[in-house]
Image (cartoon, rainbow, N blue to C red; front, top):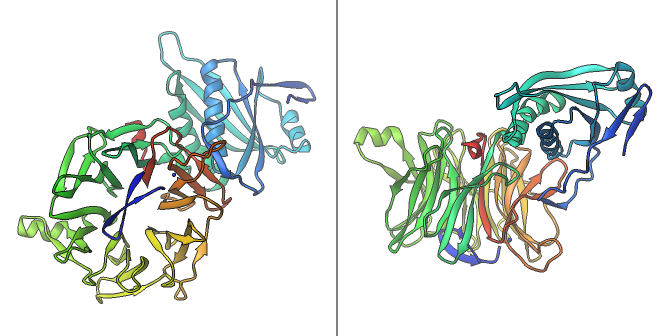
Length: 454
């Protein structure tokens, strides 16, 4: 069972072939092992057919090529056929690939490490097979034990050149991992759930991680005997600090772009939870931390999102008795509902560039992901996921093309339900489950920094 927070109360919820062309033969590499993740909704969108050629027998280079293939295909924009060849293909070969249905060729030329050196060089060249134009060419370093991280760096440069969009692998995920009913830790990984590190190993319940917008700091809430206190951990040195420890709940901070203000959820005098504002500038003037109450509706208020103009999107049950998504104008002190008022909606996440809010809504017995645009005065709700299994705790990727969430559905080939972290591709609608151990996962949050490699 996972502990999730909604509206200031704790709910125990069951969440969970060879290419032979003229003048040259390109021989296939051994089959790439199946990835650890699996797809719930495979992409049905057309993908650009691509041939990736590795001009080397170097074992590390072959592993790097497989890792790079994984990164590029993660976006659902390319379908890569990975091959090995003895030498770089000629212009004639590149042009002939187009007639065989290949639109793009990525050629990896390897310079092995010099004697006594740990890192070698790899030249990455992407060529359009139709016009035989070079779209990208750059040389990178790689190491025998760092190919996975090196592939992320290459994808970070290559994907924008090919697609005009940033690589999701420049970011990191944080999430909860539960070992028992009284032991939940905080982990950090890359966006594919790999290279997981436990950054908060405390033998207690640590929940609801949130990234700071400027510092390498992760905030989370920790259950104590008297209250649930807000904590932080520095990702670089794993040092923990108590941020606030008032009676009741102290959790779910959402930070301004400059990191100097935060909206958070705290227990009020009546026993309900309200949204409060911490302002570093005001607190500095008074030489103590000041928390200003923003909501006064006597309902249970949670999951605040801070907008660039200082307004707040949050979840509350104060009007309908069931949670809905609301917008608070902090200057006019006016709150209005932006979901329909019907059903159960929770866990909003705001994306700044698209101005979209994603949240979870109960539909026919399953929690599904929905979105709406806050500038749309009609507040039209768009359903993003379908089918069985609950999809909760959504969090936008920094680019706005992906959503991390908790997926509670039956495992592939099993009737067991163990909540895991899923990634929704908003363009292709595919859902990829990226965590797989037996421990339940929850509360994913995404940041545009490679903290998994720290």
